[in-house]
Amino acid sequence: MDSSRYNVAVIGSGPGGFAAAVRAAQLGAKTVVIEKSFVGGTCLNCGCMPTKFLWQALKLKQKIQKSYEYGFNSKLDPVVFSDVINKRDKNISNIRKGMELILSSYSIDVVKGTASFKDKNMLSVSNEGRHLDILADKIIIASGTKPSSIRGFDFDGNKIISSTDALSLTKIPKTMLVVGGGAIGIEMATIFSGFGCSVTLAECEGQLLPNEDGEISEEIKKNLSRQGVEVLTSCVNSLNNADKYEKILIVTGRSPVNDFGIDKIGVKTTASKFVETNEFCQTNIENIYAVGDIAGKNLLAYTAQNEGCIAAENAVKGNSLKINNKVILQVVFSMPQSASVKVVDFSNYKNVSLGKFPFTASGRAFIEGERAGFVKCAVDKVTQKPLAFWLLGAHSDELINTASQILANSANHISRESFFHPSLSESLLNASEDALGKCTELPKRL
Image 1: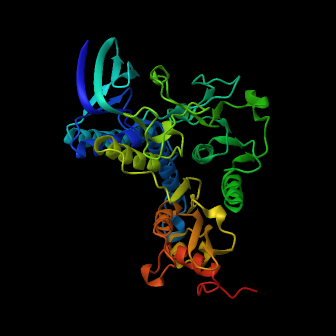
Image 2: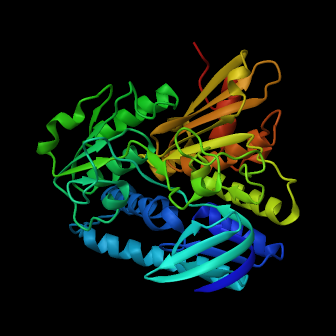
Image 3: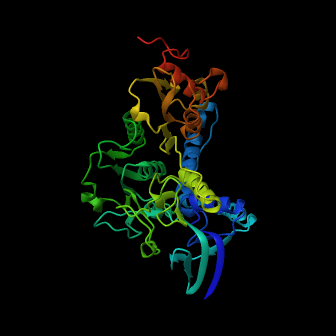
């Protein structure tokens, strides 16, 4: 059995683990990443990135079909879904190679295999019968999560499938039941229905995206229905008719990947078996940190990246950086996209005014043929400070970044000269001005 010693060992190479490894190496630490599958983790290989490629392919398909609006006479040949998948996989492979190049440029070792704790400083890595012991001063856990099934409906990879299984399909099924009306369920329903599948989307709560703004949720539901998706809310018995569907996609949650001996060394976990961490991303064991989904805070790639950098800094230089999420933004790739962001203490504000700017009033939206949707903004009536934004419409996934920066930097107001015209982003300004009763781009309120 071979053994190696490092300053920092990182378990997992998803967004959190990758960021942690690179930042640790930048700080001069001898670093190793242990990855049991592919560099990039779930996000790159069977989550965010492949999903967004399919969404983009569908969007392009729709653009071609509507090109007559710009005076073009284009005819779209029938889509061969397996060709779309092949192109997607090539893109993912190229992105992965880029990530591997970055790791190599920092002299970060990548060890393929499954890690397990032998003690608080020693990891045993197994891969196809070979074993390697890795000794590390500090260990950062970034093992992520996996899809959760429903009791009595375990994943079989054929009829009852997970999101990972769904992204492996090379042929569009005739019918599909999607159980779970969160972000993943909405995105899967959007993609598969857009490529010709008859989709039913079932959510047990009273609305899609149960924690989202009610108006946003209702508009997404309407848009899905227009796209041919049967949407069922307050539905607790959707699986009673399982036989009528070719595929049943269960996307009701995710479970932590924690089966590598953390209990043996005494790492504390929550009731849901996520790893407990403090504001430094540190576990109850001084030299062990945890970031991303496994820490169970937000289950978002971009917060995982932030946590990875914080954990690396603290592991190498001593605990000095704390997680300080002033805002958390959410994006859903419905058709069109939706997004939201608000200050973390939004519920504490009582004297709030709401403004709304529809994209039908945006010149740029007219030019792009993307008039569906709106921007809503909440402002503090006293300070006129923006507190939250909710978006539904084209490019919401990009616009929300600007909205997030406005809130994160505690802007007391938004200045008109900061926004180019004509742009979609100036809709953020218009919505905030509407909340204050001074938007010049909307008719006088009755």
